[in-house]
Image (cartoon, rainbow, N blue to C red):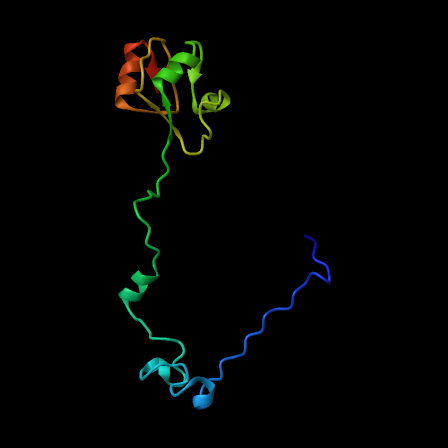
Amino acid sequence: MAIELHTIKSPKNRSKKRVGRGNGGKGTYSGRGLKGQRSRTGGAGGLKRFGMKSALLKVPKLRGFKSIYTKKEAVSLSTLEKTMDGSKIITPELLKEMKLIRSIKKGVKIVANGELTKKIAVKGCGVSAKAKEAIEKAGGSVE
């Protein structure tokens, strides 16, 4: 629906609360309740909190844990078995080029998930202990 002059509605105006004008306005306590800091003049800011408690109350409460350290992108041995032949040295750049990982920035780690029968050479990648054992068992090397 287009906004045109005949479709615009005027805002609903509410009358302002007339505070402190006797019983005709808003009754005996003028909408401020009974005694206390907020019932007085200048007490609109509310109660003040000091110290560590106020700092803790301001922190957003989120469940769980989020590590500040970025995890390396994982590549399994079974993936390398399917995609690699023994002629190339496996580097993060090659894995990015073959679209096995999204980014080189976080780093790359080869994990022992699956079997490896091909002889491969790995350079510039993180390797888990079991993956290193499997690569060397197949006749490959890790730098």
